[in-house]
Amino acid sequence: MYTLNNTATLNDTLDDTDIQTTFDELVEPIAVRVAKPRCADGNGTLTHLFFSDIPLDTARAKAICSKCTLAEDCLAGALDRAEPWGVWGGELVENGRIVANKRPRGRPPKHPRPAVIIDEVPIPPHLLRVRPDRVA
View (cartoon, rainbow, N blue to C red):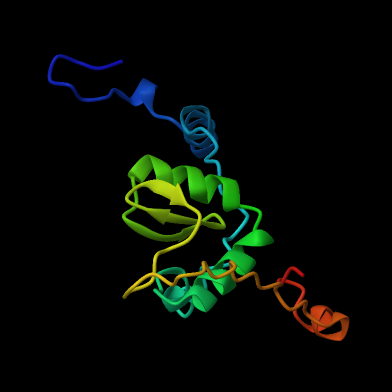
């Protein structure tokens, strides 16, 4: 109960358990994303692959994305943001749209070159036991 000058009376004091209960009722649990993108190491080490003009680099980036659990969310986010370029969610994006391949600089070849496809090299099983946070 508050008096006219907005000060609490002695009868309105709460003990620690009441405060914690009130806090728990007011605060909702926060959803935490547990999965981490395979391309994010915190240092930007792989950035050159995802934003390269070289077909071999973009193929490597697509291979990294091929086993990522967040690829669909990544691609959806890139399309929503209309990303100007780069590999997002295993797809090559230019001007906010998915494209099959990036046209290299210079004159186009007379005969179209085949798409570069690279499989990601699997991590040997004996190394997986050492680093359980890595996913094959």
